[in-house]
Image 1 (cartoon, one colour):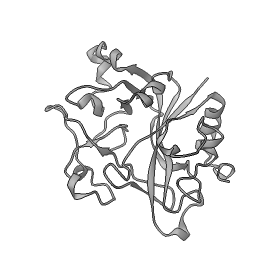
Image 2: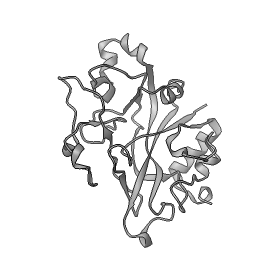
Image 3: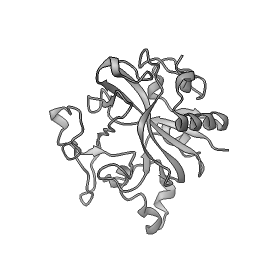
Image 4: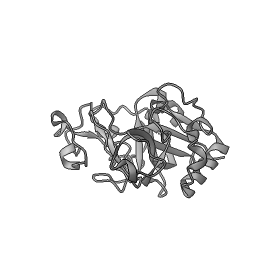
Length: 242
C-alpha cells in the first residue's frame, strides 16, 4: 500500500532570510537555501545570481552557491528528480519508503499580490504549501550509496550532497518520471493564518498541527495517502480548509 512523507524544504526567513513567493493563482517560485558546506572543486554549483529568483536575495548571499536539493528535472541547473538528506530526523523516515511511495516537499512561501484577487485557499501573509514530490523509484542509505556501481551512482551525480567535498547524505532518493515541481501550490496552512494547519495536516497526517508543525516531518498512512493523492488531482481543497 502506498505511503507518503512530506518534509520542509526551500528558502525561509532564516536561510537565506527571505521566502519564495506564491501568487494569487497559486503559482509560485521555488527558491533553494544556500549551500553551507564546501563543494568539490570539479562540481558545478549555481549561485543565487545564476538562478535570479523573483525575490530580493540579501546582498551578502547573492553570489553564494545554493543547496539545490530537492533537485527537479524541470528546474534550472537540474538534471533529474532526486533528494538527499543528512539529518537523521528526516533521513530515518525517508529511508523506510518503498518504490511507489511518495516523498512530498513543502515550503513556507510569502504571498505576493493583491489580497482581493488571491485564491481562497491562500494564507494572507505567509503559509506552508506542498510544492512538489518524488514518486519513489529508488531509496539508498548513505552506506548503500558508497557500495553502488558507477552506473548506479550516476543518477545521483547532480544531487547537492554528492557535490559536497565530503559526501554526507544519510539517504538519497531518485524519483520516477511522475516526479517534479507542481504547477500550483497545495495548501497545508489555513486561509486565515500561515501558522494554523488545515485538515490535510491535522486529519490526514500524523501531526497534531500544534506548535511549529511546518518544520516537522509529516507522515501519511496508506488510506491518508490515497486521499491526499485524490486531492492533488482534483484540487478540491474546500473540505480541508475549515
